[in-house]
Amino acid sequence: MMKLLSQHPIGSHTQIWLIFNSPSNPTGAAYSAEELKMLTDVLLEFPKVNILSDDIYEHLTFDDFNFVTLVEVEPKLYDRTVTCNGVSKGYAMTGWRIGYAGGPKKIISAMRKIQSQSTSNPCTISQWAALAALTGPKDFIHENKYIFEERRNLVVKELSTIDGISCPIPNGAFYVYPDISKLIGKKTQSGNVISNDEQFALSLLEEKNVAVVFGAAFGLSPNFRISFATSMDELQTACDRISSFCKNLVD
Image (cartoon, rainbow, N blue to C red; front, top):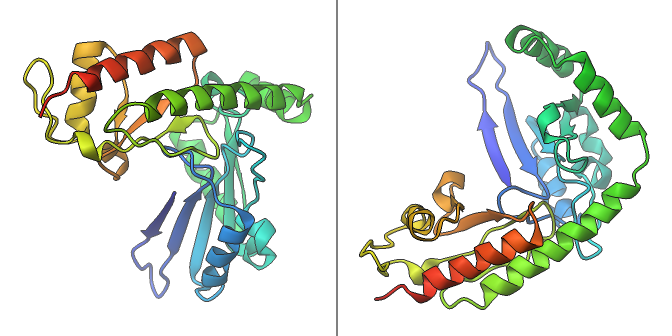
């Protein structure tokens, strides 16, 4: 996922930032080195564009996908890239609330000033726990990756059998982002019209007790997002309920 963020001029200077997330939330899509090269070639032509690279899902890739960063592909972008990461995803430490960033000294110094006054900084225990995760054994990361890959395969397989749902196979993260274009306009058993993906998500929650995030929340519709960061049994139950819900929709 990419976003452009421009900052209003301060004096004679204007800051433009490209926010880049790969593998991404919500789709799980990831960019190969070849695809990144096409992007970096363009970025080299626009020296005023800075890059905020969100690498939080770097350890969660599937099918032998090779994770690479923009700066690895094009080292000339090093001085205008800020890299963000954390321990929430690959290290399964969501509750510890620890993230970190690396980049040009001037930018990082400014970020520290803002952070210190807005949150009073993360607690010492969380910082030491994150350090232990980053410097300790990494075997569990590879084990977890295959567990997530198995879950992904289950969800993609089950959703792909449902008429009206198209489910791309994600390269990373722990989300699938199915398309429900063919279900728009249909009615539920209770008479609700699936007018958009938000109505789909609300009706699915009300009638089948399955919670998903509708695509409009991410700016891309008509889709919905499912996280497969849960057990195989729960995922199977959710997929069965989604299938039942969709089979009962009428024109």
